[in-house]
Image (cartoon, rainbow, N blue to C red):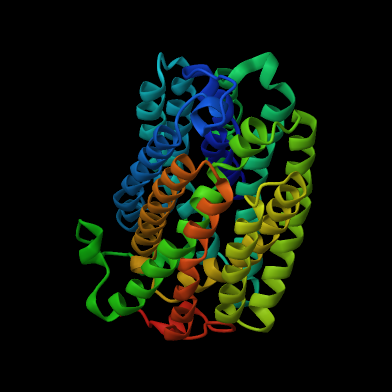
Length: 401
């Protein structure tokens, strides 16, 4: 599952890592002071393009939900293979909007891959090991994203942004290994024996589960309002605005990788010791504050904010992932994760549009960061509307019929 998550991160994060080159390649850079002059494309065009690609991930909702009918393994192999193939195809785009359209077609498949990897890992583990397993999935995704970011930082002049997307052929070559290693979880096999689930997936999540689902959806939306633009604009900000050298950017990514690993270990430990809710709430606040610091306007703030922000987001991942997967029974778990992904997509789109518009109008990333990242902190209190799941199996919370 971690290898599948690696492939998902590798395929999806290329557009973030290469955004500066994409903007220069399809736009025109000049010596002016506006974001459009520095980046090559306007903040509005970049924000809308990123929003479209994020919005396309809404397709992950029905795709992920189909795994409750057809199985985790089959859907995962379909999504990772097709998603990476379309990502490679984006390298041939003749214009910026063609690039947006083609990449957007692969985005829901790769988003579904990451969600299905989390679901499968959760179903193959007991409560004592679940946070560790989900931390490993998050580490796989982070490693894939980090590798493509480092490759772009060091080799962008040699291969260009098109070469970055052609490199998706490398994780695509791992598909036979993933198919050989992945097995259908016993939990799923037992839970769905002789049962068929209705489509669309909203009907699969029965009324007793919908109050919890609503809380999860709102939390996913709020955290993604922060992480969507915070992650999507960081390399453009470093390369096109602060004019940071590639070797420095690569070092920043390596530092973030180390911080991310430390954060996953800390998040797993905290989720198992102090609980999923408290860990998730405190990490969410920290992510927002550090994202604001990242775009404050100086190179030291960028380095500190980004690296420590990755640490905080990594603390958040095991706790939140375990909570989402433990609150619902096996028969609807993939559908619930699909809703969580969809809410995250809408949150990221909202954040991207607001951040891009404010940055374009004010010509200041710091103002855009404060306006975009701080208001979602109010949603943190919703964690306490959910039961604490630490030390409990999903079957204890929602016994299967």
